[in-house]
Length: 243
Image 1 (cartoon, helix red, strand yellow):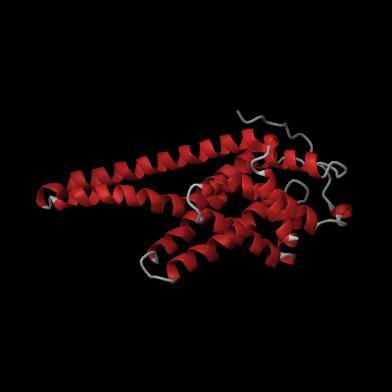
Image 2 (tube, rainbow, N blue to C red):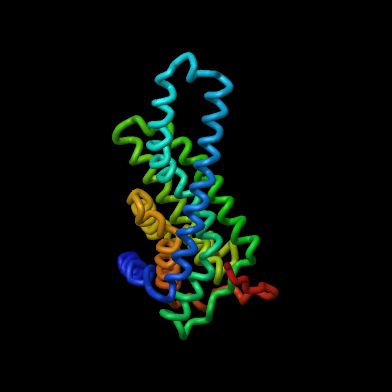
């Protein structure tokens, strides 16, 4: 079930139907990472200027330059789960509509979450992800524990986030929580796949779209035959085109 969903996501994430969304997702992910990095760089510059460390310790300039390059790579890894949460919340309904229409044409279509609610979902998980990954970052220099802590924490967080976003198109919040609990092992394994992708440089930029496609398929497979309990379509929700 999970393996089928993973292969479906691998096949579809670069498909013509999703290519436009993928490029917009990558662009937004890169833009957010650059903004965060510029902010961190500015804070470092202010700190060094105020404390006049470069005058007292000339080597600090060289060290800061090195850390700027190395820090970007570290920031990409540790901030991408949080960035992914925001980007996924923004694009998931667009991705889900394409996948549902293409692969499940006979099923009732899902109802898009209100735009504000989808973003709030993403921000909530982004905040939680930042807190968890700050703890993982403290373990960065402990071999064996650093990657393990990062992977386990994000497997849980990403699995939960993507499943709730995908299932939320069909189910009430209470039913989403029940389904996630009933299938906690599969959802965690799905999160582990997404967390593993986050560790792959460059490819981790496709995490929001890949995770969304995979979890839409996984949700469909997990709830097959349970359509009688799907919540009634939401009303008054306007479709918003992301430009």
